[in-house]
Amino acid sequence: MLPDEQKKSGGSGSVAGAGPEPLQASDVRYDEWYKTTDGHFALLAQEAMVRKMTSGWPRRGRSLLEFFCGSGHFLESFWQSGFDVTGQERSDYLLAQARKRLGNVAEFTQGSPERLPFDDKAFDYVVCLGGLEFSQDPSAVLSEMFRLASLGVLLAFPNSWSLHGLGWRFSSRKGKQAQDNDFYKLISPLQVQGWLRKSGKGGKASWLSNMLGPRWSWKMHNWQGRLNLVSLPLPLGAFSLVRVDLAPALAGNQLLISNRRPLAAGAASGGLGRVEAPAKRG
Image (cartoon, rainbow, N blue to C red; front, side):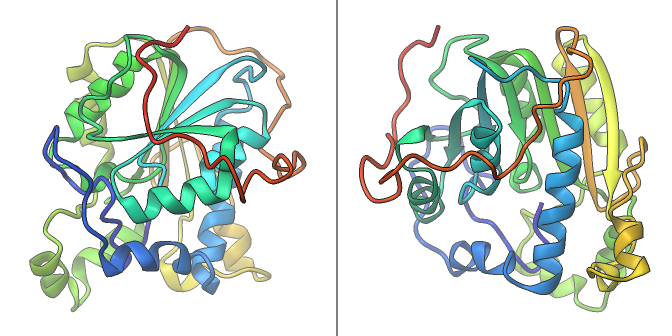
């Protein structure tokens, strides 16, 4: 999830089958936002909750596909925790950044998230941790995620019910933002529930959110920061997640996302992955 002024053009509501999008200034700013004070805090808060939501997922020998992988922040964390990872992205620039970050430890596919060239149930897990808000057809994206996943789906969305969402909607800047970036939209938990029902998939849904305060409170080393790191099993925070388990999760698995597993030597300087999709995965 990105703040309102950071518009990720990769996967930004593109038409199925369209080619890669040209470089935009918003693509370049994508990584830069994580270097700001509130951006760095948001990244840490998001990683903590993703870690908590996926702690029961087995990793060794398991495959994971990330929709709208951007420059690969989360994809790298998933690889470090033991998954075999594949990323989907439309933006040439963001995809190049992801390849540079992960090297030959990941596979990539460049194309429309509404229809990807993989067989049904090609991956164990499919996640989308930012980008659904840019899609013109979020329901189709979610249906594609369920088509490709055999064990579980994890979805993040910018929550319109949060204090941050309310502040964005009613700020004096909203009019210009809506005019210039009408593809960007906040999403309510009720909308997500409707898309889940439309997908026709069963499975147990679990909700979690953090970053409960407004954006000005996204700071480290104070009581507001500690409050924003608290996760609630309710979709009330700016960063909200829903996980759907298509098979029973393993209890007590503590192989969490971490930074303890280094990238392979020379991975970032050579063999920069593949921007293609295999015809079939086992």
